[in-house]
Image (cartoon, rainbow, N blue to C red):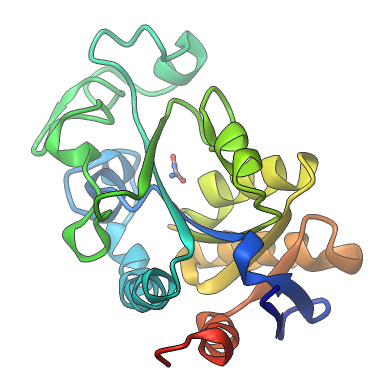
Length: 228
Ligand code: C5J
């Protein structure tokens, strides 16, 4: 047992680090760089940059501890057979999933824009999940992978707060995991939606989970890190 207490809202949360995984959601060029899916939808990708440094620090600490780390990428097969029409047809032709952009075809697996940014790139041995939806549990191996390893708690970081991080937080909560979202390690194209999403997660006694910061998690990890 390596139980640590992490200060969080609405309450502190006690987690066994051996039963805790870090999930890094969709830190892809398509969302964080100019010319990707995010910008095609009219957003400013610079609003997401502040997550890169704290996620990188968290990855370093989690790797030292031997914590299970999972990265996700949102994207579709080149023939779009895994992209429902409802997701595809919502935007004007030329700005849709599968259309050509400066980093290759938008949100298509294997294209440059689909790749995770170098600063937080996965290391060998870390699971990378390709997901066709927003919720990382939808149509992926994630739940089975976590259950096979006895994971109870998920540290959730990445982009965007109100879309894929929130969808995954709800998916985790519904499946019985403790979802702990790190506010400085998630970002939205809308600061207002970022705040509202975090407020929703921790409302009503933690209706979807807990909200904390990377400093609080790093303090918890440091207390257990034999090299720390
Ligand atoms: C979006 C995501 N925003 N990863 N995806 O479409 O949040």
